Picture 1 (cartoon, each protein chain N blue to C red):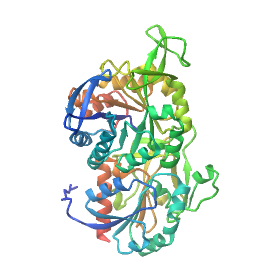
Picture 2 (picture 1 turned 135 degrees about the vertical axis):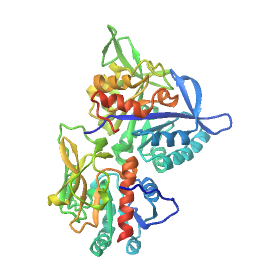
Picture 3 (picture 1 turned 90 degrees about the horizontal axis):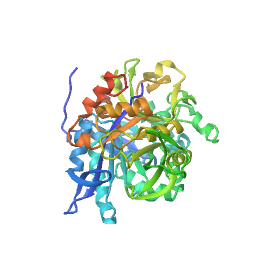
Picture 4 (picture 1 turned 180 degrees about the horizontal axis):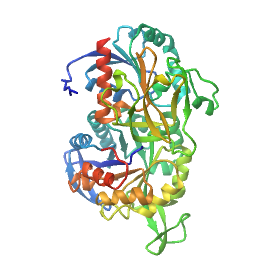
Amino acid sequence: MLTKRIIPCIDVDLDGDGNPAVYTGVNFEDLQYTGDPVEMAKRYNEAGADEFVFLDITASAAGRETMLETVSRVADEVFIPLTVGGGIRTKDDIKETLRAGADKVSINTAALENPDLIDEGARAFGSQCIVISVDARRRYDEEGEYYAEVDGESCWFECTVKGGREGTGVDVVEWAKTAESRGAGELFVNSIDADGTKDGYDIPLTKAVCDTVSTPVIASSGCGGPEDMYEVFTEAGADAGLAASIFHFGDYSIQETKEYLDERGVPVRL
Amino acid sequence: MSTTTREAEETLAEIVLVDYGLGNLRSAQRGLERAGASVSITDDPADFEAADGIVLPGVGAFSEGMDNAGPFREPLAAAADRGQPIFGICLGMQMLLTTSEEADHAGQGQVEGLDFVPGTNVRFDQDQKVPHMGWNELHVEREHPIVEGVDGEYAYFVHSYYAEPDDPDAVVATTDYGVSFPAVIANEAGNVFGTQFHPEKSGETGLRILRNFVDYCAEQ
């Protein structure tokens, strides 16, 4: 049986000396130094991670060069699928990132600005390597298309850019359908509301996307422990659960998370 | 069963990785090197004969793969006849068959595969989530050096079509995804085989398969 995937994720920025370092944040802010990207990748590869996600959170061109080198070094250490996101804006960026050793690229803002990038990427490199990432934020007004009931209130989910600081007016569920029809191979659903809270994934958001598309969905943001993974797999129907801080800070290991899921009947690779 | 640890410097077999413009060459190369092979990436069929084994990597669409692999058809057939090990990965495995419905579905008509393992690649049922993406379990159906020690282990798949060989004996291992489909196939002589999953992305299980391959090449 196909298993649910447990995916650790690192956010990589340049430190004061210009060296790549992993940072972990709360609500997309308050970044805290967490470790060396290559060392962490190696550790998670050995710890039984099903995939590994590397997000480049630098914005500069100089940072991008350094990041591609780091991606190559990470790729040398992991024998599981590697997804790289952050700063990918063109077909050439996709090509360079795949060439550096990524198996998939995650694209966010650039796809919202230029949806043709999804078609171009899927045609040139295959749908399996095009992951469309959204940073969703709850809105309680009348401007959305798909509404979910959250604590007795009706809300919709808006695609944001710049780490949640800017709205786009685009409905996440509508966008997920568009991305799928243009050739996205996977959807990576982040929640600005849940990020870093450890209160659990945004279930209404994840469920709304999973119910609408048939492309695999990676749930992200808010994981505080194995019980949150269980909830997002069984209640929202996610295909993969992503987590950062609970693994980085050693609250839970990947193995114990998987054992918890296995005991409750969720198929995992032990 | 013994577990072997190997120094990366030790070369057990010389493997050529065929560069036909598609495929994750770097990952496949790293995996094979970790398994003890010395790997050269080549688009020159003249390099095939001296190699201990030939790997056809693969990501992408069937017709594009066969378009690009066209120039290698005769040299690969000659290598198969000589008994050289040929290992197809993912699309590389699907190309070992006679044809695929994929090209037909894409409106490209009947596209000829390499035909080392007679059969057709067919699509998963419409009610299945496609692509079949993620980790799934291997059931070894019969003996073949490539699958030693991996029965019941998990491997990483990403594909929408699967092989349906004419001869059921060509199926070495299966995996369940709505249907039981071939995860590993081999020709009658045993020297041409393929995995639908990506061993280079399948953690320890994948490395075990790559080591099995390197050992098999070294013995030939």
